[in-house]
Image (cartoon, rainbow, N blue to C red):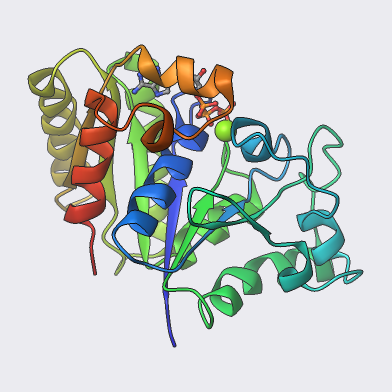
Amino acid sequence: MTGRVIAVASGKGGVGKTWFAITLAQALAQAGRRVVLVDADLGLANADVQLGLAPELDLGAVLAGRVSAEAALLAHLAGFYLLPGRSGSGALAGLGGVGLDAALALPRRLAASFQEVVLDLGAGLGTAQRQLLAAADLPLVLATEEPTSLTDSYAVLKLLAQDAPARAPRLVVNMAGSAAGGQRVHATLDGATRRFLDRPLALAGVVRRDGKVPDAIRAQIPLLTRHPTSTAAADVQAIARSVAA
Ligand SMILES: Nc1ncnc2c1ncn2[C@@H]1O[C@H](COP(=O)(O)OP(=O)(O)OP(=O)(O)O)[C@@H](O)[C@H]1O
Ligand SMILES: [Mg+2]
């Protein structure tokens, strides 16, 4: 099997990457796909916390060659697997040499046994993050309506255009006040990429701001389990359908 690698990136922190990556993984699993979520936020991994899991093994142990990726995988009741990151240590943030090569090879290896490999890339764009994004089959760039998020997302799109000119990223607008507000963000970024990077930017979808999201995160229960009929749930499910292979 050759699965697909979907990377979730944003530049700016706190825009909802981890939550979105988890919820997209759950939506794809509900659609019948075999899914693994990789917490590739190498500095400040926390997908396990949002999912209410307490992993014993993590990506750090895998990249150091101490355990296999398969051994570190946790099955979540929501129907997908998690490869947990490492929390707090920051040891992976400056990954180099063998660890970096192992990190870059891992998504493609997982794609041999999963249909969808979803990477939560974390904020910023260090070497590892940048290369993981450029190597993804489907780079998803998250932005919100905040001007600082827009400029950071544009910076990510610009780097990606340099690193992987043939790759077509898609935009996800998160925490939008309305669908129309999200579409305005898309129009702005699409205008910028057409004008300065000479390429259009497709919209994967808009996720509206929804109080059910922080509620689910506080409860450490995935949104599609806790609030299956919420607006944010419907928005992410629509994105899962729109990116269906
Ligand atoms: N659609 C939404 N509606 C309301 N709140 C949201 C939405 N998406 C995300 N949030 C809130 O945004 C906060 C940040 O989410 P999250 O931790 O997933 O962001 P992040 O981009 O992964 O952050 P970091 O850059 O620190 O890794 C969460 O507390 C969550 O409640
Ligand atoms: Mg995060």
